[in-house]
Length: 252
Image 1 (spheres, rainbow, N blue to C red):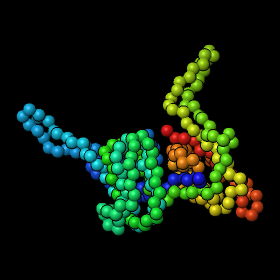
Image 2 (image 1 turned 120 degrees about the vertical axis):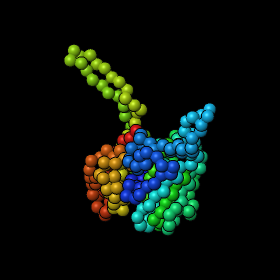
Image 3 (image 1 turned 45 degrees about the vertical axis):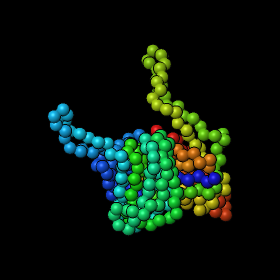
Image 4 (image 1 turned 180 degrees about the vertical axis):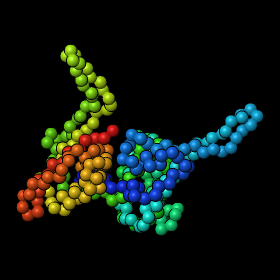
């Protein structure tokens, strides 16, 4: 399999409306999976007598409507960092609300989902999902690097999430601040100009490393990652072939 970089997200440049209305809908596309958007409860009236307080009912479905401003071709989408259990559906259309089903999957709470579809060009998109929290929604055109990379050790490196410090008297302390992370040091030998251009385009998608991205490795594993390399420094081999190393580190 190839490496896929889900680096661009059309939601960032479109208008996103969530029903029922919820606070901070922008959390769906802020590139921070640790700050999820949660589906809101719906006010259904007041009960009096034995129950003199407002009655709220948790909505069973979240609807995310996306207006891209103009028709845009979409070939992939992802739902990350969620607590959803049930069917999630993607729809598109030339008018709002989007009504033509393009894809669906059965969500498992805590499991990231990335899907590809046949290219569809549309201005309006809709995602329906069971109620719950969602860390990130990505919609756009994933970038595929056709040549498999090499890993120096044959597997990802592990980065501990530990703060260490030493007192003036020489005493050492350490505290675990969170989960460990994977680090990928991908090296390509004889990378084609086409694949190099794809990597450069993905780098621009994430503002040269300012935003997180979704990486699908050759085995199909999905990781929400930070692009660690500050520069793209290919070594020319001739005949439009290059050697290149890019480092990614898992983002929590």
